[in-house]
Length: 257
Image (tube, rainbow, N blue to C red; front, side, top):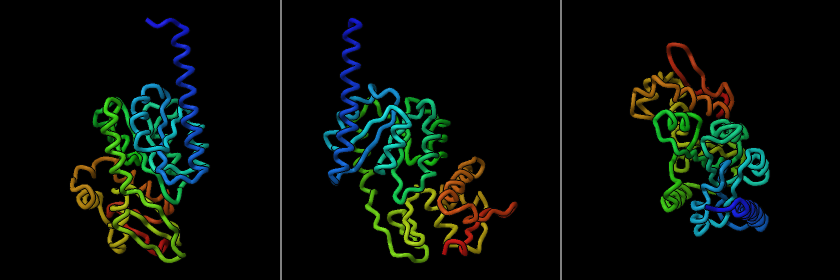
């Protein structure tokens, strides 16, 4: 059994470690080091210590935040490539923080991964409906998360703004350019946008959308499609997708092209 003073010493050392990790991340950004920026947000940072230590061998620019306020302030200075959010963050959970990130409409949105010890279908559906790019449970497998990150970052591209022009879709990178600004959408939202954009004169029912995008008509009975439509409207305006009761959704191409 550890004495009280020993536990206090361990906590002080860990606090110093996490503070140093955040400072190192900020220093690398100021130096312009060409490294992907990876951020973890977790109230209990001690439990992800092993994972972070393993990842540091391959990814030099990692920041860890235990408080939402610090994390959001950091976003004002540097947009990360990947953000890991603990589902059970307090006082606001990962879903609430993810909404805050999406509302900021960065030119290049980070990949957002929600993680939890819970693994039931409801929790995963909640994560994906909130716009998360992935949901994982990895605490005891840092080597797996390292491989996951390497594959994920292969999709990450440095976006160079284009001259102002009509809307353009980049199918390979899931990018949408509007008036020279690049928007990077999650895969399903991009596919939904692409479907409506390529067929501006047609209303698609929820069943048709479910079959085209998910190849599963059962999705139409959930809130999944509504959430994806809402997220797209957050990027391009409420009127970009028209809805008509009994007919479905279609793209209002006049507003974006």
